[in-house]
Length: 187
Image (cartoon, rainbow, N blue to C red; front, top):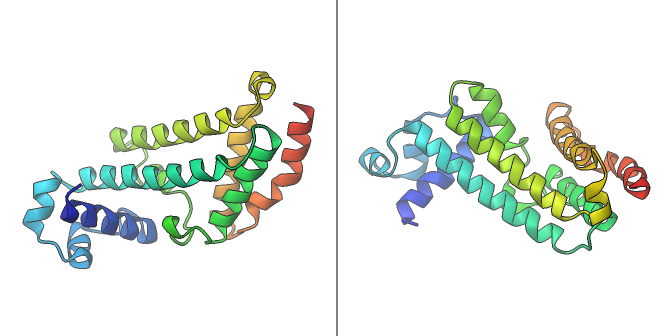
């Protein structure tokens, strides 16, 4: 990837995640990155393209991190316990590549844009589906066949993330562990 393009994307992601997408203008991204406006428009037709690139970059960062975390565990309860342990580390700000926790960038984007930018919404939905597929791959075959189990796990994950953000409760993922133990011992 072009160094200047990469710097624009990383700067935009940092600013968008920290302050919100609508609160950050193109001029702030240019100022913080030290890149000229002409260069930005050489790489991106406008702010929405830059947002899409920031979402794709965050998707890569998050998915690579979570995949590596999950790869350490055998399928079933150990892997799902590992998922929520990894989330707990993220919520506590212990995952350097995801920066300090400020909620889910994908949820935040959908909240900010609602129905206005369908392409951005689709990118966010694709990220969530990709993570869902990863979680599904961490279940045993018997657990995968259990009706509603995957949905429940994904809802618990999303609920922990939102609870951590809204209530400033960095222990939200940890609080799910006893319920997970019960759910997965029955499955």
